[in-house]
Image 1 (cartoon, rainbow, N blue to C red):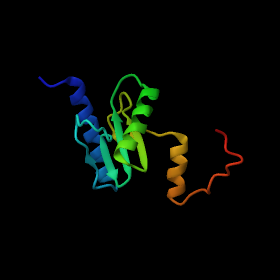
Image 2 (tube, rainbow, N blue to C red):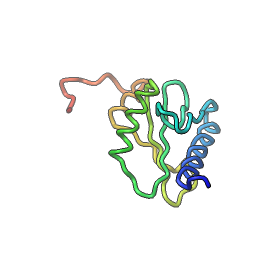
Image 3 (spheres, rainbow, N blue to C red):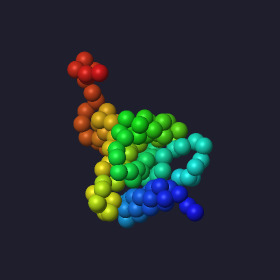
Image 4 (cartoon, rainbow, N blue to C red):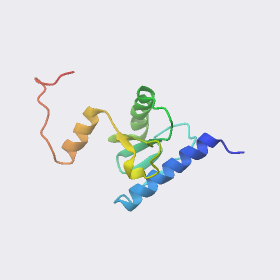
Amino acid sequence: MPNANKLKGDRAERAVRDFLRTNGFPGTERTRAGYFRDAGDLHACPGVTIQVKDRAAYAWPEWLTQLSEQKTEANADHAVLVCKRRGLGDPSQWLAVMPLDAMTQLLREAGYGTAPDREDHIA
């Protein structure tokens, strides 16, 4: 009998994949499940890996550590954590989470903002 948590996770990954495919990212693919080298759950486009979570309780520190490791393993420029929200089956309403410095990098690469002023940067 299949693991219920695995089935739930697979459904969430497919929901995010399908949402991305119909919203401008037709090449979004799931990665190999159970593969030793964990490079995230989905690759949305070159340089972007996505980890999908469908859990009742959020475990942000653990998940963000995993996300960083998956970004490195995937040799990705960007990594996003997508978390299903309880009671909301529509993946467009789920949370997309990434560290703030990663978000500012993403926005700069998209052509917004300016290079950071290192003298004013707060570590």
